[in-house]
Amino acid sequence: MPVDGIAPSPKKRLYLFDIDGTLITSGGAGETSYREAVGEFLGTLAPLEGLNFAGNTDTGLARGVLLAAGKEPTREAIMGLHDTYLAILADRIHRHQGNLLPGIIPLLDCLKERPDAVLALLTGNLAAGAELKLTHYGVWHYFAFGAFADDHHERNQLGPVAASRAFEEHGEDFTPDRIYVIGDTPRDIECGKAFGAFTVAVATGKYSREELSSHHPDFLFDDFSDADAVLAAIAPLQD
Ligand SMILES: [Mg+2]
Image (tube, rainbow, N blue to C red; front, side, top):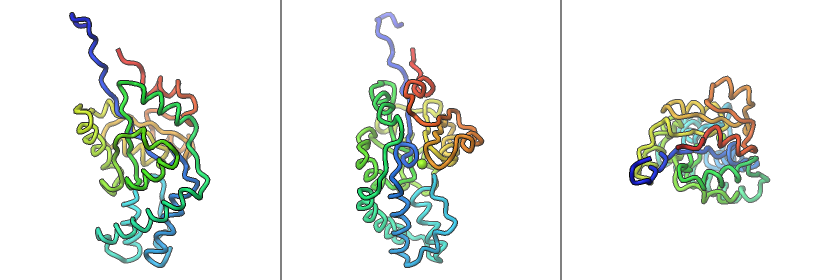
């Protein structure tokens, strides 16, 4: 303790949450809206064949779909597809039966109360799509900023974007050893490892605990229903 008796405030940690399969399931609203948008925008669903949605970014999907349709993935074409998707999602998000995943609210509440925790998003969703989904499920307000598909079409490029936004917001340099990337797919794990952050995998999406384990995340949970256990692992109290 310093001589003036004031303990230094603990160094902040940055928690970067994925959305689909991690915070919520949209009951298929996201994927169905994307498929419908492709059909509406391109007049065919053929370019969707073999595309893996899980952990991909919306801009990555748009590029893949346009290329598969034999079209240049120009900025205009990508934005056109995105606008179509967002209009459909704004309607479908209310019509599909999705839900918050187990333990999310208690976990977010506990982290939000901690002076050493910063909550943000790292997601393959477009920012506008993320806002639609998380507002509908009542958790958008927990996150002050994020890195989105608008920032880059490769998920692995989004970690440094999130870290630099955190610096802008908090005036603090978050080194990778104080950043946690939290998600439900191997792509989330890969994305965290790509910039040296801790990786936290949760088997509430399409991947089993065993599948996620084979990608060697630093932490692995069946779900987040035991908030105390999750916090003890990823947010241990600091001196
Ligand atoms: Mg996900």
